[in-house]
Image (cartoon, rainbow, N blue to C red; front, side, top):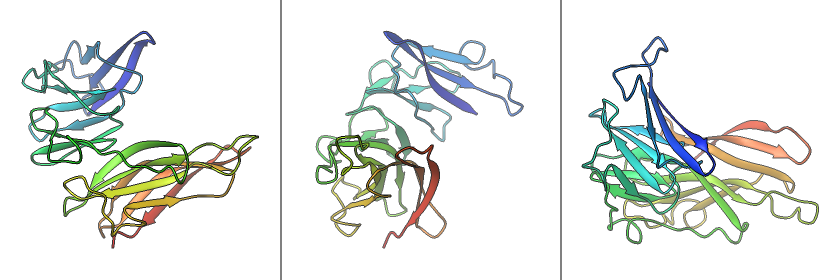
Length: 235
């Protein structure tokens, strides 16, 4: 089991990786006594994926790092073990030849951006009709290669503005990075929970029936909020 987190001071953050044995003890064969510290971290270092060969991908702000199974940097990946992405990688998923990050960006196995996806490897989707801010949080890939990105759109209500709350948001892209117009409203789905509720998806997955299952939180103004699970049709 491998865990990732951010550490260090605000002006000198580090990416922390730790590997544990099945009994919860640190695996001392990994890194230094079970821990690897990299000075390329940011406060957004929170995504992780493991390749079938045991190598580990970790999001470090605008970079993705690849680490060998022994806890050393894989210098064959990107530049010195780090590859750039278009926005802080809040989630990473793997395909046989590509790696997808959230917000939606695609890299080749060696860490270079996949120029066949979207615009030079990335996609930007406008939700301005819902609200001025969007925060993607997770990504999943359907069996046909379509890419689901989930998160939050809108903004938290305030005393002066209660008309634009934050809502659940989903987008679906084709394998080449185009919005799938057969999904929701021209590729986008927004689920709101009232005019004064702040909501956002934290994680998304595809269940055994091919449906999308999203989990997140909903907090009407003045409340502590609740965990919400929603399932969406894909056809």
